[in-house]
Image (cartoon, rainbow, N blue to C red; front, side, top):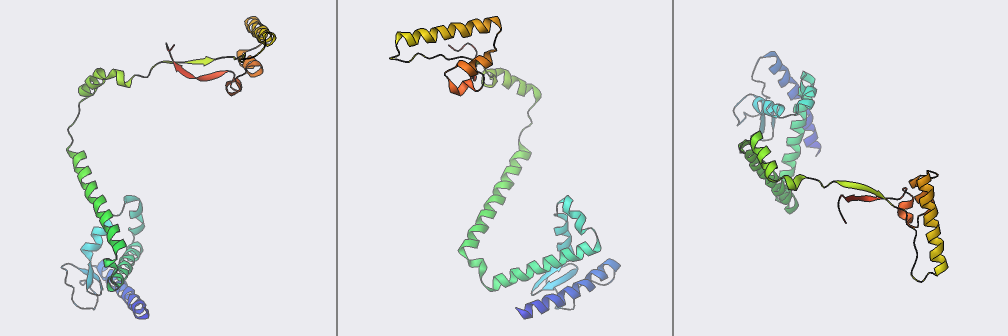
Length: 221
């Protein structure tokens, strides 16, 4: 591990020289290591893998516009290239430990592959779907208008004065008298419906809301 860290440090110094050479337009920008197998201008070599200027630029082009500002400067490009080198170092270390044969990693790779392939097909379908004119949309709506219409609803409030089964005649008469009084007070404007519901209604759920019930469809019996 110490040897790998020393190599990464030496490589980072080499990268600095390579990037400087590229910015001045002189030389190939390659390090002093063995010739790269890839064609193109070599920026760094990690083991047998060469990171070329073309690879680097392709990765830069894939960076979202919002983050691209961070790598617009020479320093930003150096830091980004350093991250690519570090990533390659970790990747090669993982291969040396046969992590690529790990069942869990294989499953994750399969899921990623599945997602990418599905995304590709979805994109193609979206790009190739037929254009629908405004007239076609209007006609479809007219033909299926009933499916989109929302039934008109009305707001209902009530005051419940309950006579329970088994209550005496006196109790029933008492409730009836209360109902008549509430009705008279409402008609005379002595009390609001909401206040009357809160004070007199036996429906404790709606009484706290001024006797308000959930909206019901107009015309429903």
